[in-house]
Image (tube, rainbow over all chains, first blue to last red; front, side, top):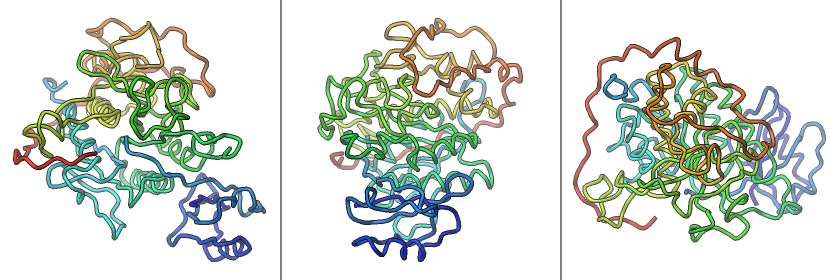
Length: 73
Length: 351
């Protein structure tokens, strides 16, 4: 399943990947994170369906949201 | 507005969609960092090309920025493109507004997916859309095609009908949400119905769909009379084109001012004021232009009337179109010629 993980600015993809290493089949998408607000950023991540429920928000990882498919109207 | 020299010139509309054909439509830029799809390289029968054609109905001199979904449309892809728009605007103020003819056709169970795009107003995509609007860029969204009378075959039961079919970013207070009507001012049966999931008074307005724009006899993507631009996907860029037209005359309009001008100029076709089928009525460029110029509109004034309570307030608290009207319209620059269109017919594809 695809996710959007919001972190504090400054956390790089390698550090995020290290934090996600305990969760099965997590992969951080290549490319820079997308800035959000003044001091947050968003990474695209693929991972298990229960990632949002399991992941620990630790001050660096702030939120986990689904990256859901949409339709063209 | 055309007689006064305003045809959308000096305005760039950003289209987040499947991609736009730049051989036919005036693609002037967009998302250039992809190795998968460059701006302007989509097929002529792409969904984004339809949106391009429909923007140019009202604003034939506007230019376009192409922000294609790089694969399946998803909120992460839209987030990327909205950030690209924000970055571009910080550099040179373009694009001036955006068109978004996509969304969700179902609502997942809230208790199982509480932070899904449909339920969580602070989903990163919605936060980014609000950033774009706050930067001064009006954002137009289609209402959706899951109206109760004739829902699109892709709609799920959870996302059909009044109160269930306008949601996620399409229902944010800050955006302009557009339903679909035909030329007789009937709401088209698939057009999604309010109240919206976040802002309850959605849609904001309606615009025309079901016409020969990109598709149809003699149109760029070809086809016969059974092929035509359709969906709230077509209605939204028609309204966005009117927005581009107004911005070409009143470049200082904020997104809220533009929204109020469009709403106050709309032709009310349902109950007085707002209604969940067509919002405040059908977009009327001439009336909105007259209101901004401070002269009586050629159509009856819209009665904003009572409506369902908004979950986060509405944009109607910011009614300062008279301030803009006093400043007067920009001096119209030299008119550009009509864009030419190929008339070669192509075999239409199903969409």
